[in-house]
Structure formats: C-alpha cells, structure tokens
Length: 380
Ligand SMILES: *Cc1c(COP(=O)(O)O)cnc(C)c1O
Image 1: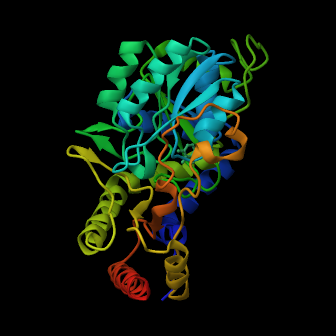
Image 2: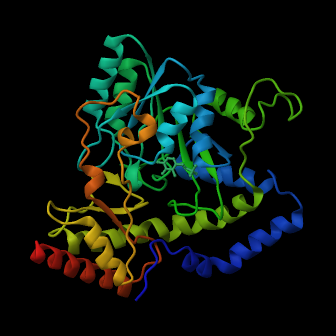
C-alpha cells in the first residue's frame, strides 16, 4: 500500500465538478483580481470565524507582515514568538527590523508557554533595550494556543496579540474559533494547510474597523481613494480570484465534514498508539483542526530508523520541525531564552493525516507503526 501524507488529489476528485465549474466561471467572467468571489469569500470566512472583518491577501507570511506594518512595528521593538513553529512566524518580525524573542513551548501542547512568555516580557522590560510590543502565539499543528492566559498577559503589559492561525483554522476553544483571538489573526491557504487553495493564499481577521481599513489600503500599494492615489507605502498582496472561487467550494467541504473527519481519524490514532508513543495532547475545551498529527517518540527510539522502516512500507512521515527557531543559523546573533528545550524537535514525527484517509489505510499505518517501533525497541 502506498499512502499520501496529505492526499490533495482525493479531495479534488471528490469535489471535481464544483471546483471545475468555479474555475470555469472565473475564466468566463474575465475578472482575475478581486471581484465577487473574493468579496463573498471574505464574508463567508469572517462569518465562520466569528469576526467582523476578513482581509484576504497573497499568503500567510504576507498576512503577518501586513499586520506588523499596520501596527508600525520596527527597529527597537520586541516581538514574542514561540521557539517551535514554522520559520515565517519569526521571519516576518526580523523582516520588519524588529527583534524576535523566542519563547519556550509547553512540552505537552507544543504551544507557547504563558509562564515563560511572562518571564521573557519582564526580562525585556528590566533590560530596557527593546520596547515590548507584540505577542505572536501560533496554533501549532492545529491546536489553538493558550489564548485565555496569553490575552491576559497581553492586557497586563499592554502588548498587542497577533494570532498566527496558519495551521489553526477550524480549531476552537470552547466554541470560540481559531483566527478570532487577539487583536488580529492570520491564516494561510497554502495547499497543505487545513483549508488550502491551489496555490498561495492568506487572510487576516480582526474586529478592529480602523485596522481593517488600513490593511485594505496596505495590501494594494497603500491606496487612498483608489489604486492610483497612494497615501502610504504598502505592498502588492492579493488573493487571486481563481483561488477565492476554489476556496469557496473547499470551505463548504471543510465546514460540512473535513474538520470532523480529521478529528475522527485522530481519535483512532490516539486510541491505538497512546501506549507506544506520546499522542497529541488536547486540553479540556480545546479542539484541533489537526493540520498535522504529530507524535512524540519515547527515549531510545531512533527517529531516522523509524522513518526509514515506514518509508519502505509506503508510509510517509515528516519531521515538523527539525530545528527550534533559536537553533536556526540566521537567528544565532539574536537573543535566545537560555533554557529552551531543544529536545522537542528531535523527538517529533508527523504521520499521514487528511480528511480522505480511509479506514484500511489508517489500520495499515497503525499496525506498521506498532511493528516498526517494537522492532526498534527489540534491537536496542
Ligand atoms: C505556513 C505557515 C505560515 C506561512 O504561510 P504561507 O502561506 O506559506 O506564507 C506562517 N506561520 C505558520 C505557523 C505556518 O505554518
């Protein structure tokens, strides 16, 4: 059996007629930037998330950059990011000429540890060199970060909170949806994300009317009353009309069944694997969109060995992420939290996960993971 890590072809086959029709409609309309599909999608996304404004843009990295630009973040500012996330979360901070401060993550949730965050804020304040400005929590692997505590810390120290929900779209905390936390939130429609398009795409969510207006200007060259009246320095960052049309079909499937399906699959994985590996920890009241199904291997299980064993059996697995951000060479000169847990990145392994994984495939993966781990343990 050969299994896809994330089977986008199967999703396309399931919705082929609707997606083909949506693309054909855009081609016929002759409008390829903006237009009705983008406007309608923004409304649908905002309604689903439960916020006033959705501003689509070219990708999830631009989404973060646009918010930092709108907030005027730059040199001398400290921005707090988790040490364990995709590079872009910290890249946008450095790109804005601000300083990323890496915060240790909780070993169970893999998300920013609120206590460590507060310690780091206090340290930056007492050093007096940088101005603490923004916290960017990440909903890693689909699990919303600890917003109840992080938002309190934000209030206490008067910092802005920007939710990086690139992986979190579809999750919630007690019914409050991912991408509705903080002062603004962003997501990505990169094809492999929980809600993906057929290329690059991204969006920003906020309840702040002024911020929404500013973002709509910044994403189109700092436009004033129109594109040729430029009142500020902005960017060119828009979601293509074709991508918006595709996303409208996919959003429906996402809401109808896809998020539920990945949660059903996760429940089976959890039940079958929890004795031999650490399965994902979902706190009470939290719901994950399972952008990844990430297990943590026990001490003594050689990860490379396991990856190879699974590969031979047609089971792909991925290491998200092989390095902590503070270990990335480009951030070497940046200030690093001294007691960062470097062991997390060496122990994690993501298994195939997507809404179209069928029962036979799931059983096969589970039994082969068990066999492979037992074999590695026996040879130790
Ligand atoms: C994917 C991702 C991004 C960037 O999104 P792009 O659309 O690829 O630019 C940012 N943050 C996190 C946590 C991501 O996973």
